[in-house]
Length: 361
Image (cartoon, rainbow, N blue to C red; front, side, top):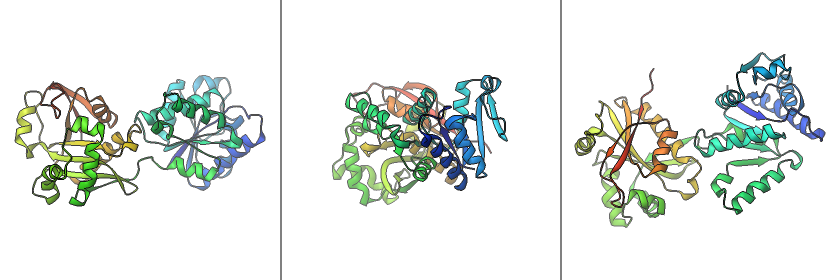
């Protein structure tokens, strides 16, 4: 079952609308066939959202530290009340159980929970939506503060876009249940895409690390044979909602013996090892964890379509922190370090090599 995590205050608040809308939200989640994950409390806004879900016959999972149960803060009538050892474990489990987050009005605890969830999205630890259900303008001052953080230079616009807000219960649910980058799809690059690739290669960040020429002749030289199918390397566009935003190049290491020879002093490549290279071409997708999401989705595609692939091994220039951090956020681990020829001659030869193995049955 898909579940949504709801944050909210243990107090009822000054306006009756806070608990009324919380009750409506719980009931609406149940009607939509979605489970509720929340902090396990029986009073205030938290109690109201769980009352609504239970009254409508929905699944409700409460997550609460043991010391709160001992102080009689938790509900005693939940079929699924999960008692954990600490506040940190509480938040981790709530995150793990949920497809997205909705924040109702609440105090410091609610604010801390919603900002941690947004921060985890920004860091690429998940790709879940965080939605403020802005009852009677409760979150208006907070949204103004976040906008001020952008104006003051502490938050970039892509980070600001991670905080969604609505006054409508059904819209909040629709936003929270949908992954920010799902479904991602991929298709092979064709010559019709060469103009797009040229524009991407001209982007400052891509130009810095890929160091590709972007004239029509250069794009033809570097991508034409793959588009024709005369070279084993595969070039794939990543698309979100049908719009291309990134590029992934895929190959088996054994297709290019010269690369195997270059990396062999640093790492022995196992049978079935494959590799990827990647870029985010749409500048609006930078800083919102599109890279890790794209990598995860493409690796899942490798496991599903290439039975000979045993692991994905990717060398990255050590100085390109954004690139190797994207791999780490996608589940890769660093397995080696050493000197390799850089893509851009202004960089030194220091590289890290990251690896992700095919999951077991």
